[in-house]
Length: 192
Image (cartoon, rainbow, N blue to C red; front, side):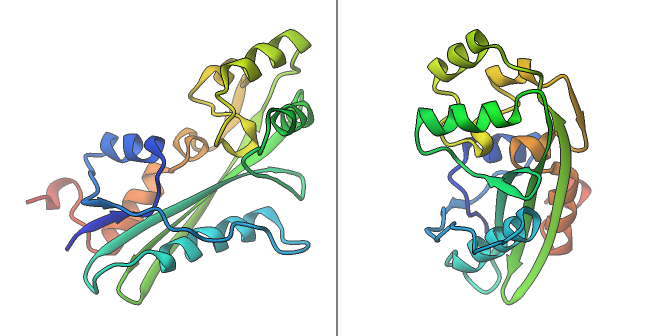
């Protein structure tokens, strides 16, 4: 039995290491992540995690772990910005407001799939032009849903969250550990 992480995210690898899990292989799937017309953030996020898990090639007894993180402002999905201009647009929309960060996790072993999604409410302080421009200049927005990462420089913009910190980073550890155990992955006392 091998554990395959279907993600190229270094943050997800770091989070797994916190609970003593090291993937045997890393195989980021190449799927179309475009939301369907009128798709809501939570079902979209769950669909992405499931599609990623199904797209990863694995042996019948291997365990595949995939996740998707989405920033939701109301019904709007804020994905990874494609440019500094789009990152600025996302951050200005989030400035001074609460939003949700949804991380869906899918674990597949053979034909069986275990899934969970975790929704965390995040408050972003009102950003000054100086703060926004300084943050954009760090390029930390690149590859981050909503244009920010709570564990990076933008953490200074987040005075309050209600939910899972690790879920906002990209992999809710409590829920992920439960899914891995359900799939038969040896965690904690079960480790050989």
